[in-house]
Length: 249
Ligand code: PEP
Image 1 (cartoon, helix red, strand yellow):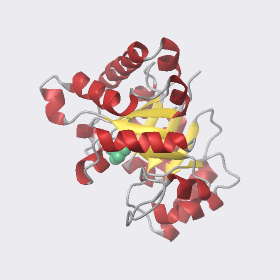
Image 2 (cartoon, rainbow, N blue to C red):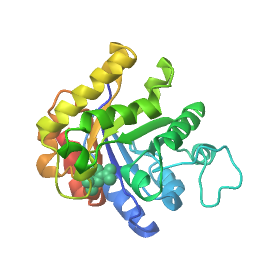
Image 3 (tube, rainbow, N blue to C red):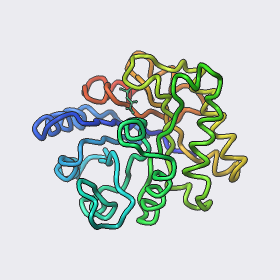
Image 4 (cartoon, helix red, strand yellow):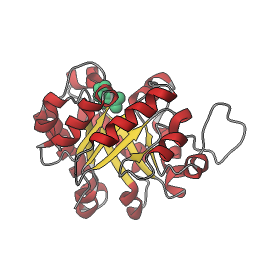
C-alpha cells in the first residue's frame, strides 16, 4: 500500500512569526487523516518548526540541500545539518531550483545519492515545460528526468523515494493539468519505473501531483488511481486552503 501524502512547499515565504502562526493554525485544524501531511518552511525556520510540531503528526521537511558532507559551500545546507535538527525528508529537483539555480539532472543525481546515503527520504520533483507539452515531448522529457537522476539507484532505495510530478506550466500559474492529464502522466511514470525496476517498486512508490492544486480542484485530481496526493505551493500558505486540500484526500 502506498502512502497518501499532502505536502506544502512554502518556498521563500513567511517570516518567523508568520511561520509560527501558520503552523499553529494548520495543526489546530488538521483533520483525522490516514494521509501523511508535510510542511516545508524556509531553512531559517525549520528548527523552530520541528520544535513547534513536536507532538503533531505533521512532518517538517526541507526544500533543498547540498550534496557535499560539509565544507566550503557558502550559503548551502548539508544532509547532516537537516538530520541534526530532526528533518528526515528533503524536496529535491523543484523546477524553481532547476530554472533559477541551475540544478541539472547531474547535480540532482548527486543530491539524491547524498540524501539516501544519510537515510533521508527524498521527494523528487520533475515535470515538463509548456513547450515540451505543446510539441508532444512531455513523456520523453519526464522519462529522461527520471532516468538521469534516479535510474542508477538500487532497488531498495525506492522505499525512500516520493515522486512529485509537477508540470512547470502549471506551477504558480493558476493553470492546472486536468485530472485526466495528471492520471495519464502518473500512469506513464509508474509504467516507466516498472520497466526499469519492478512492478512491485512501481506499485509502491507514491506519486504526487503539483501545480496549482486548490481546494476547488484537489478532490478530482486526488480521485485518480495513480495520483497519491499533492505537492502544494500557493494554497499551502493559507491554513484553510491547505486543510481543505488535506480533507480532499
Ligand atoms: C510548487 O511549487 O511545488 C507548486 C505546486 O506550486 P503551486 O501550487 O503554487 O502551483
